[in-house]
Each structure stands twice: as C-alpha cells, then as structure tokens.
Amino acid sequence: MAATRPVAADCLRLKPQEIPLDHENSHFTFQRPFVATRGAIATFGAETLFALLTRLQDRARQHAGLDYLQVFENLEQGGSDLWFIEDAVAVTALLPEDY
Image (cartoon, rainbow, N blue to C red):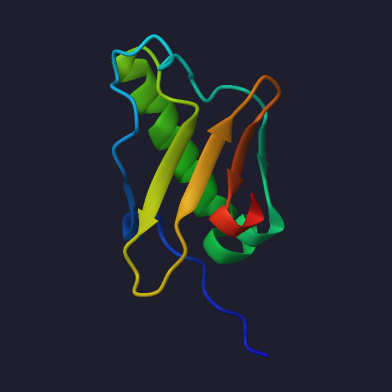
C-alpha cells in the first residue's frame, strides 16, 4: 500500500466559528499542551498540524480568544475536515470521525 502525502496547510480554510468573536465564551487561546489523533497525523502530517495551531494561536491573540471548537475545511475534493478542540487539559487536533 502506497503512502499518501499529507494535506498541506494551504489546502485548509478556517471556517467561521459558531458563536460571535466577541461572545463571552469566545475566550480560548489554544495555548495548552497539544495532542493529535492518529487519524489527524496520518491525514495532515505534523508540520501542517503545527502550522494550523500557530494560525489559531495568532487569531486568538487578534480577537482576545476564540470558541473552543475551530474547524478547518479541507479544500481537496473528498477530503476530511480537521477539528481543533481546546478543553481544560489540552488542545486536540482530530478528524470529525475521531470524535
């Protein structure tokens, strides 16, 4: 079985979050320890995951926080989206089917 190449960060677009940026629950900074599921690593690769985490951290600084769930839409046809979820312990990168 041939290895597939990871999806590049420029093939992913951050979707608008479900709550307004100025909502009181939009306070997550994505600065906690970072973990990723096997599926997210296999699909996107560590380099892309870290690039997207950095993008989220920058955006959180810009807006004084974000919603706990951020979704990157995969622009490659048939590609899986990528979720970043921050909870009290960590920031997790995962595929929707990993949830």
